[in-house]
Amino acid sequence: MAKLFLGLDSSTQSLSAVLIDYDRRKVVYEQSLNFDRALPQYGTRNGVLPHPDPLVKHSPPMMWAEALDLLFATMKKDGVGLAEILAVSGSGQQHGSVYLNDRAADALAGLDPRKMLAENLRGVFARATSPIWMDSSTAAECGEIRQKMGGLKATADATGSDTFERFTGPQIRKFHKNEPDAYAQTASIALVSSFMASLLAGKIAPIDPGDGAGMNLMDIRKKSWHPQALAATAPGLREKLPPLAEPGTIVGAASRYFVEKFGLNPEAKIMVWSGDNPCSVVGLGLIRDGMAAVSLGTSDTYFGVMKTCRTDAHGEGHVFGSPTGDYMTLICFKNGSLAREKIRERYGIKDWNEFGARVASVAPGNNGRILLPWFEAEIVPRMNKPRLHRFGLEEDDVAANCRAIFEAQMLSMRLHSQWMNVSPDCIYATGGASGNLSLLQVMADVMKCRVERIEVSKSAALGAALQAAHGWLAEAGSKPEWEEVVAGFSQPIPDSEIRPDPKAARVYDQLIEKYAACERAALAEGGG
Ligand code: XUL
Image 1: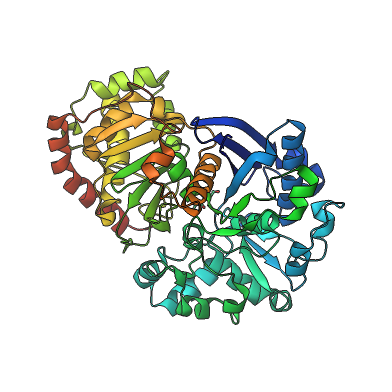
Image 2: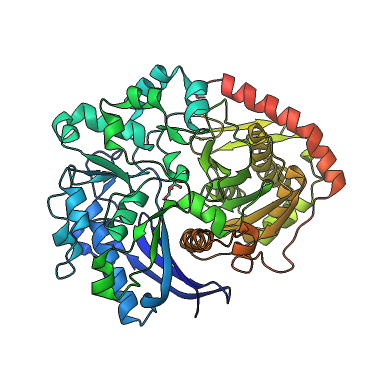
């Protein structure tokens, strides 16, 4: 019999499913349900509720639950072998939180398959809406928690990240301050991931260290709730949080609701869910120390696997748990494609091929000329005003400016990933700009490692399906190796490898010092 594992991904805009046939190493079914289109009655735009304050970004948790109903109905209609699924796991957009009252546990235990999920859940929310990762309305609470934790470095060292507006702890603190009665009515706080797992298992599900690390509440090394962080956040918080559980933990068997209504295998194990970034790391096949990926999109994001936990003393990068039980790092550079496009437009360059030719016309190192391309306020390094700096670089030198932006972005990546103390031996490049070979060559030369291109659709849902497989195999006593579990599911594009040029790499070993000095000078000028 085929070994089928289901991975779900509850993201900002949609709920997706990926079903894998483990022995055949194949994705056998994919489906996606867009919240705005499938559930227009909630009035979301791109999955988010309109709000007069642009800093406030909430979504309705009931919409996520209803989407789960609709997705299972679609899978049943599509003839998916739900009765054969051995385990289900999932991925949730990180940081978002769901507030349940004391009726929730009973409602979950007694989900009635004759009613819709939404009807079953009526009256269980202590807060109708959930703050999500796009929310940035908690600057005051971030400051308060950080101070009680002993400052930025201490907060990052304790919880894996400095306080960030979108992180769950500051959001909980704001809720407690602004709506103390509703906070008092909250019996249980879930993340998006643990909320969805709770629906499937029919009981309050634990939180895994991958997603727990996005809360500013978990001791990143002990993987347990951090007493000082809880105390700094809100009173009585310990009682409202579910337990933390290692990846692969079985929450329970599938709830009767999904078994009777959709024909899900009654023996199917519901595994603890994780955050979308930890799941994507596994979905991309990043399973050992020294593996990294860079997603080149509007913003550029660097993901790395780290065996020994280290945290960023500057509080810019994040450390989360990885589904493999190790750690993953995430650094987000705001000025990614956004800044590359600005330079291309500024110099009227037709396309990226022509841009690449300009880059190639100047030697690596750009004769020491440096650009700091912060067209938008930057996250890494922290620069809260848009600023453009040129050091020894003439604005009208087109080719030098083209090379300068690529070099700046990659030098910044090298400099700001040093705290991990892991030199990647291979970087997987993904995202819109990963087809830009001239950018990838600069990446290989600056980072001194090979770069391979990878395209995985629904990497978070795939990662969740792989987690379900790994957890189920472990439970069945077969001690699966991660290497074996991911093999064949996510492969880099054949022949896409780009190797570093040793001569260029030596140039960048020198230039990195100068780049760092330029950055320090720019930050000292203000806005940092
Ligand atoms: C990570 C973050 C986002 C969300 C997107 O810290 O905020 O990547 O997880 O869903």
